[in-house]
Length: 132
Image 1: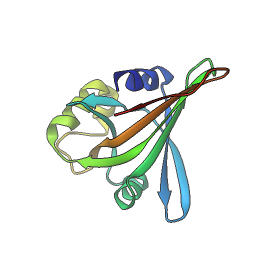
Image 2 (image 1 turned 45 degrees about the vertical axis):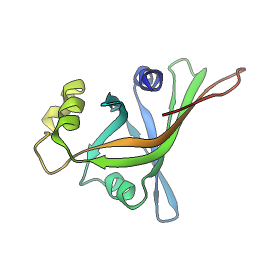
Image 3 (image 1 turned 180 degrees about the vertical axis):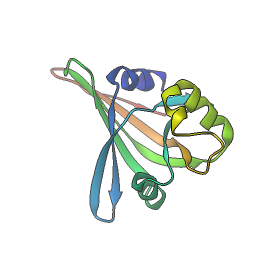
């Protein structure tokens, strides 16, 4: 899981795909952290992405490294965690978000992957999959 997190962090931005009815929705994200042995992301409860995840937690992340030679796809179900501790952890690791989010507001949302699967790809190489 650490390798997955580090690869995504080095990419800087990843794209999160959700489902809205029968329409896929994709948007850029940047938050990714491990807390208590689980891979977490962060968003705001007021956003459409949060509503889509609550309706159908199955998501996929895709990120490509800066060279364009390797990328990762992460799939699984995102599970809402409303505890204060993971919110604090995320915001401590992304201090720029503190101007928009607080662990004590009603909007900050952290979610972790359940039954996660990450596949590493590269041009010319065989894919490698890890489960977490």
